[in-house]
Image 1 (cartoon, rainbow, N blue to C red):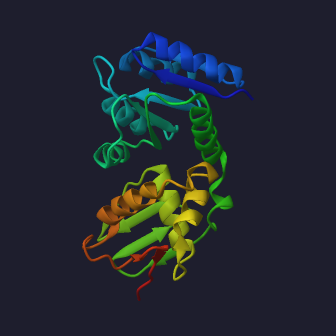
Image 2 (cartoon, rainbow, N blue to C red):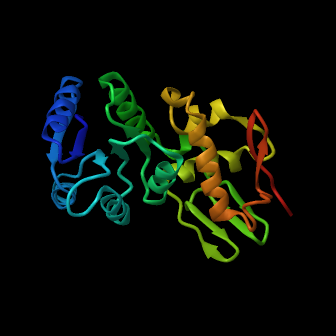
Amino acid sequence: MTKKILIIDDDPAFLNLIEQVLTQKGYEVLKARSGREGLRLIFDQRPDLVLLDVMIPGIDGWQVCSRIREISDIPIIMITGRHKSEEDVVRGLDHGADDYITKPVGSRELVARVRAVLRRAELPSSQDIRQGVIYSDGLLTVDITERKIIADGKRIKLTPREFRLFALLVENAGRILTHKQLLEKVWGWEYTDDLDYVRIYISHLRQKIEPDPSLPRYIITEPGVGYSFQKFG
Protein backbone atom coordinates (compact mmCIF):
# COMPACT_ATOMS: atom_id res chain seq x y z
CA MET A 1 0.00 0.00 0.00
CA THR A 2 1.30 3.44 -0.94
CA LYS A 3 2.42 5.46 2.04
CA LYS A 4 0.85 8.86 2.47
CA ILE A 5 3.07 11.73 3.65
CA LEU A 6 1.81 15.14 4.75
CA ILE A 7 4.15 18.13 4.42
CA ILE A 8 3.25 21.20 6.50
CA ASP A 9 5.32 24.18 5.38
CA ASP A 10 4.54 27.72 4.22
CA ASP A 11 7.35 27.82 1.64
CA PRO A 12 5.79 26.87 -1.73
CA ALA A 13 9.16 26.22 -3.37
CA PHE A 14 10.15 23.80 -0.59
CA LEU A 15 6.75 22.12 -0.71
CA ASN A 16 7.00 21.53 -4.43
CA LEU A 17 10.58 20.30 -4.23
CA ILE A 18 9.85 17.79 -1.47
CA GLU A 19 6.66 16.70 -3.21
CA GLN A 20 8.66 15.95 -6.37
CA VAL A 21 11.36 14.02 -4.48
CA LEU A 22 8.89 11.89 -2.51
CA THR A 23 6.51 11.32 -5.42
CA GLN A 24 9.39 9.95 -7.48
CA LYS A 25 10.02 7.45 -4.67
CA GLY A 26 6.45 6.21 -4.81
CA TYR A 27 4.89 8.12 -1.92
CA GLU A 28 1.57 9.91 -2.04
CA VAL A 29 2.11 13.51 -0.93
CA LEU A 30 -0.31 15.88 0.78
CA LYS A 31 0.57 19.54 1.28
CA ALA A 32 -0.52 22.15 3.81
CA ARG A 33 0.72 25.73 4.20
CA SER A 34 -0.52 26.32 7.75
CA GLY A 35 -0.90 24.42 10.97
CA ARG A 36 -4.69 24.53 10.87
CA GLU A 37 -4.79 23.19 7.33
CA GLY A 38 -2.33 20.47 8.31
CA LEU A 39 -4.42 19.38 11.28
CA ARG A 40 -7.52 19.24 9.10
CA LEU A 41 -5.72 17.00 6.60
CA ILE A 42 -4.52 14.73 9.40
CA PHE A 43 -8.12 14.19 10.49
CA ASP A 44 -9.43 13.78 6.95
CA GLN A 45 -6.60 11.85 5.24
CA ARG A 46 -4.85 9.92 8.03
CA PRO A 47 -1.31 10.22 6.64
CA ASP A 48 1.42 7.72 7.58
CA LEU A 49 4.02 10.41 8.31
CA VAL A 50 4.12 14.17 8.85
CA LEU A 51 6.99 16.45 7.77
CA LEU A 52 6.41 19.52 9.90
CA ASP A 53 8.15 22.89 9.61
CA VAL A 54 8.78 24.62 12.94
CA MET A 55 8.15 28.17 11.68
CA ILE A 56 4.70 28.23 10.10
CA PRO A 57 2.08 30.99 10.37
CA GLY A 58 -0.68 30.89 12.95
CA ILE A 59 -0.31 27.74 15.01
CA ASP A 60 3.44 27.06 14.96
CA GLY A 61 5.07 23.69 14.41
CA TRP A 62 5.55 22.99 18.11
CA GLN A 63 1.85 23.48 18.82
CA VAL A 64 0.85 21.38 15.82
CA CYS A 65 3.16 18.59 16.98
CA SER A 66 1.61 18.63 20.45
CA ARG A 67 -1.91 18.53 19.05
CA ILE A 68 -1.07 15.60 16.80
CA ARG A 69 0.36 13.72 19.77
CA GLU A 70 -2.87 14.23 21.71
CA ILE A 71 -4.73 12.11 19.17
CA SER A 72 -2.20 9.93 17.36
CA ASP A 73 1.21 8.20 17.39
CA ILE A 74 1.76 9.07 13.72
CA PRO A 75 5.51 9.62 13.10
CA ILE A 76 6.56 13.29 12.95
CA ILE A 77 9.77 14.69 11.49
CA MET A 78 10.32 18.32 12.49
CA ILE A 79 12.01 20.58 9.94
CA THR A 80 13.75 23.86 10.71
CA GLY A 81 15.58 26.47 8.68
CA ARG A 82 17.99 27.31 11.47
CA HIS A 83 21.00 25.42 12.78
CA LYS A 84 19.94 22.40 14.82
CA SER A 85 20.75 22.82 18.50
CA GLU A 86 20.41 20.42 21.40
CA GLU A 87 17.80 22.75 22.89
CA ASP A 88 15.69 22.46 19.73
CA VAL A 89 16.00 18.67 19.64
CA VAL A 90 14.97 18.41 23.30
CA ARG A 91 12.06 20.75 22.64
CA GLY A 92 11.04 18.54 19.73
CA LEU A 93 11.11 15.50 22.03
CA ASP A 94 9.00 17.34 24.56
CA HIS A 95 6.37 17.90 21.90
CA GLY A 96 6.50 14.29 20.67
CA ALA A 97 8.60 14.52 17.49
CA ASP A 98 10.38 11.41 16.18
CA ASP A 99 13.17 13.13 14.26
CA TYR A 100 14.53 16.61 13.57
CA ILE A 101 16.26 17.78 10.39
CA THR A 102 17.48 21.14 9.11
CA LYS A 103 17.09 22.97 5.81
CA PRO A 104 18.56 22.75 3.33
CA VAL A 105 18.26 18.97 3.33
CA GLY A 106 19.54 16.78 0.52
CA SER A 107 17.02 14.59 -1.24
CA ARG A 108 18.92 11.39 -0.41
CA GLU A 109 19.11 12.25 3.28
CA LEU A 110 15.45 13.19 3.39
CA VAL A 111 14.32 9.97 1.72
CA ALA A 112 16.58 7.93 4.02
CA ARG A 113 15.10 9.59 7.11
CA VAL A 114 11.55 9.12 5.85
CA ARG A 115 12.17 5.45 5.12
CA ALA A 116 13.80 4.88 8.50
CA VAL A 117 10.99 6.53 10.46
CA LEU A 118 8.29 4.69 8.50
CA ARG A 119 10.10 1.39 8.87
CA ARG A 120 10.38 1.75 12.63
CA ALA A 121 6.71 2.75 12.89
CA GLU A 122 5.68 -0.40 11.01
CA LEU A 123 7.63 -2.82 13.19
CA PRO A 124 5.51 -4.51 15.84
CA SER A 125 7.02 -4.09 19.26
CA SER A 126 7.59 -7.84 19.49
CA GLN A 127 10.38 -7.53 16.94
CA ASP A 128 12.34 -5.26 19.24
CA ILE A 129 11.22 -6.15 22.74
CA ARG A 130 9.99 -9.32 24.36
CA GLN A 131 6.29 -9.19 25.16
CA GLY A 132 5.34 -9.65 28.80
CA VAL A 133 8.48 -8.11 30.33
CA ILE A 134 7.36 -6.70 33.67
CA TYR A 135 9.67 -5.08 36.21
CA SER A 136 8.75 -3.59 39.57
CA ASP A 137 10.78 -2.59 42.62
CA GLY A 138 8.36 -0.39 44.56
CA LEU A 139 9.55 2.84 42.98
CA LEU A 140 9.47 1.92 39.31
CA THR A 141 7.06 -0.40 37.48
CA VAL A 142 7.47 -1.29 33.81
CA ASP A 143 4.88 -3.35 31.92
CA ILE A 144 5.97 -3.74 28.30
CA THR A 145 2.82 -5.47 27.08
CA GLU A 146 0.54 -2.79 28.51
CA ARG A 147 3.00 -0.04 27.53
CA LYS A 148 2.72 1.21 31.09
CA ILE A 149 5.42 2.85 33.19
CA ILE A 150 4.81 4.09 36.73
CA ALA A 151 7.49 6.01 38.64
CA ASP A 152 6.99 7.00 42.27
CA GLY A 153 3.29 6.24 41.98
CA LYS A 154 2.72 8.36 38.86
CA ARG A 155 1.96 7.14 35.34
CA ILE A 156 4.76 8.31 33.03
CA LYS A 157 4.00 9.39 29.49
CA LEU A 158 6.68 8.51 26.94
CA THR A 159 6.75 9.20 23.23
CA PRO A 160 6.75 6.06 21.03
CA ARG A 161 10.50 6.32 20.46
CA GLU A 162 11.25 6.99 24.11
CA PHE A 163 9.23 3.90 25.01
CA ARG A 164 11.03 1.77 22.42
CA LEU A 165 14.42 2.87 23.75
CA PHE A 166 13.48 2.35 27.39
CA ALA A 167 11.85 -1.03 26.71
CA LEU A 168 14.98 -2.19 24.88
CA LEU A 169 17.12 -1.27 27.89
CA VAL A 170 14.75 -2.97 30.34
CA GLU A 171 14.57 -6.15 28.26
CA ASN A 172 18.37 -6.27 28.31
CA ALA A 173 18.67 -5.38 32.01
CA GLY A 174 22.21 -5.76 33.31
CA ARG A 175 23.68 -5.81 29.81
CA ILE A 176 25.52 -2.84 28.30
CA LEU A 177 24.07 -1.82 24.95
CA THR A 178 26.42 0.21 22.78
CA HIS A 179 25.48 3.52 21.20
CA LYS A 180 25.47 1.82 17.80
CA GLN A 181 23.22 -1.01 18.98
CA LEU A 182 20.71 1.44 20.45
CA LEU A 183 20.70 3.64 17.37
CA GLU A 184 20.29 0.72 14.99
CA LYS A 185 17.52 -0.93 17.03
CA VAL A 186 15.55 2.20 17.88
CA TRP A 187 16.24 4.58 14.98
CA GLY A 188 17.55 2.41 12.17
CA TRP A 189 20.93 1.89 10.52
CA GLU A 190 20.76 5.33 8.88
CA TYR A 191 21.25 6.88 12.33
CA THR A 192 24.22 4.93 13.63
CA ASP A 193 26.47 8.01 13.57
CA ASP A 194 23.99 10.29 15.41
CA LEU A 195 25.36 9.71 18.90
CA ASP A 196 23.76 12.89 20.22
CA TYR A 197 20.32 11.35 19.68
CA VAL A 198 21.00 8.61 22.21
CA ARG A 199 22.50 11.01 24.75
CA ILE A 200 19.57 13.43 24.48
CA TYR A 201 16.94 10.69 24.69
CA ILE A 202 18.68 9.06 27.66
CA SER A 203 18.75 12.43 29.43
CA HIS A 204 15.06 12.85 28.68
CA LEU A 205 14.22 9.39 30.02
CA ARG A 206 16.17 10.06 33.20
CA GLN A 207 14.21 13.26 33.78
CA LYS A 208 11.01 11.23 33.59
CA ILE A 209 11.82 8.05 35.52
CA GLU A 210 14.81 8.62 37.82
CA PRO A 211 14.21 9.72 41.44
CA ASP A 212 17.27 11.96 41.01
CA PRO A 213 18.23 12.45 37.34
CA SER A 214 21.64 13.84 38.34
CA LEU A 215 22.43 10.55 40.14
CA PRO A 216 20.74 7.90 37.98
CA ARG A 217 20.10 4.51 39.57
CA TYR A 218 18.32 2.80 36.68
CA ILE A 219 19.86 3.99 33.42
CA ILE A 220 23.60 3.67 33.87
CA THR A 221 26.24 5.19 31.59
CA GLU A 222 29.23 3.14 30.50
CA PRO A 223 31.58 5.98 29.39
CA GLY A 224 32.54 5.73 25.76
CA VAL A 225 30.51 2.55 25.26
CA GLY A 226 26.78 2.89 25.89
CA TYR A 227 24.10 2.39 28.54
CA SER A 228 22.48 -0.31 30.63
CA PHE A 229 19.38 -0.71 32.79
CA GLN A 230 20.06 -1.67 36.41
CA LYS A 231 17.44 -3.63 38.37
CA PHE A 232 16.81 -3.16 42.08
CA GLY A 233 14.99 -5.29 44.60
